Length: 445
Figure 1 (tube, rainbow, N blue to C red):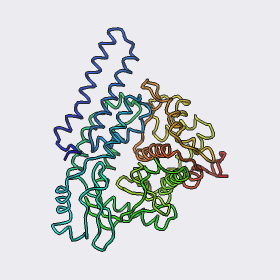
Figure 2: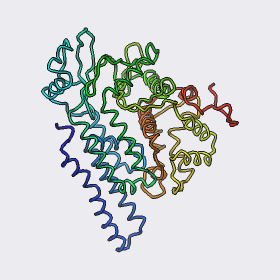
Figure 3: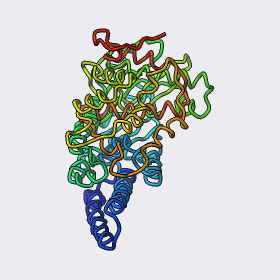
Figure 4: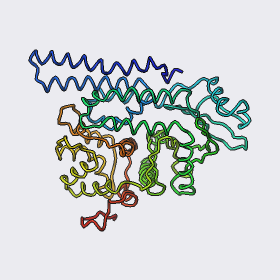
């Protein structure tokens, strides 16, 4: 299969090349130090080349390597543009233009999963996929009762490839330690592996999608297609026509982009409060705007289960940040595991890094833009040891939350959306307005 290298030897060789390359760069660096270069300059050169090789290999591989690459995209602001740019382009290409499975392979999977009489389930089935992603692809069909449906089919061997990648990646802790010394990569990998195992089980995805569909049934803002049938590797759900969010980004009016941005924020913040789950893959391909203006949400393979909703400390630290008390913010992040005990951090550098995530909650109305995000990221575009992004850890319980927030801010900036986003935080995020805290509270106008 052309888009998912599954031969264990080939995949292992790509990943195994990483520590070999690192050893070579370290030896080269030692030679340069003997030749008179300063330790800091040599260390920076090693880090840059290590980052370049890591992201190049992660971009070439799908499966677990790509999942890790997506998680590490949180830290792209810490990488020089010549490294992060090509990596982002490769990852986007993999996500948006995965080569489809041949029809014969699709039919084979359907026979294996649904039986020799699988066609009896459908009045018609389009062999050409409408979408392809990292572990499966979607086909349009007509169910036996006349309903138009989306049939999601998992690539054969996807599970084995994913789990093999994580086995290999778990051996590369030292490399990531060079690139991101504050990050506990083993904990991140363990959390991602657990989430990927869930993502491979389409019954698990069907359960989540059905729960979302029930909760948001007849909602004025959202449409969630319900599940019709599923097993571990095939998922059949209602088909929904609509305008892709990517088209709203490129061709939508300002009013359409503002509304879509507000709906996106409302959906991501409301679902943990409403049903204890967070949709954890908010890229434009998973959203449509239907004719009546509602936002249709697709693909519930990556879902963060949060039975107690957002952690109250999330809203509390956001409020404290807005009040300017960075020493309390730093201590709170230490308590939550974002800053490990051996790491010292510059509060002002931390403030600059957190601003893109927090600033929109400090004003009644906020305008996102690519230029704004570029200005915010400009403070974290080098690999010097003091770079605040490289000093931060990502606690396992926050891996998906941060993936959502980073991706969500990116989508909002693509939309160039202006709206009263703070009201959504006030409404849905516990701790943001805590009447019992004794601290000043933020209220909606």
